[in-house]
Image (cartoon, rainbow, N blue to C red; front, side):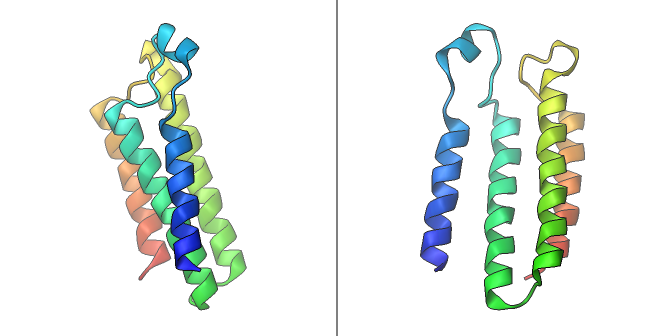
Length: 111
C-alpha cells in the first residue's frame, strides 16, 4: 500500500515539475527552486497523511482538516508567486512564511 502511495506521490511531483512552453515564454517560472521545494513538501505531507489514516493513527476528519490546511498553503504559494510581478518567484520572506506553515502542519501530522 505504501508503495502505491509513494508511486502516486511521484506522479504528482512529476506533474508539478512539468512547465508548459507558453508559461515560460511569459516569464512565469513554475519550477523556481523555492516553489519546487514548497510543492514537494506539500506532496510529501499528503502522502504522510494518507499513511497515518491507513495505519489508524489519524481519523478521516483530522486528515480532512490537515489537507485543507495544505490546500491553503498551496493557494498562498500561488498568490505569492503571482503578486507584485514576481514572475513566478518567491521572495525569501514568502518562502519562510510558507515553510513555517508547513512546519506547523508537519507537527500536526506527527510520526
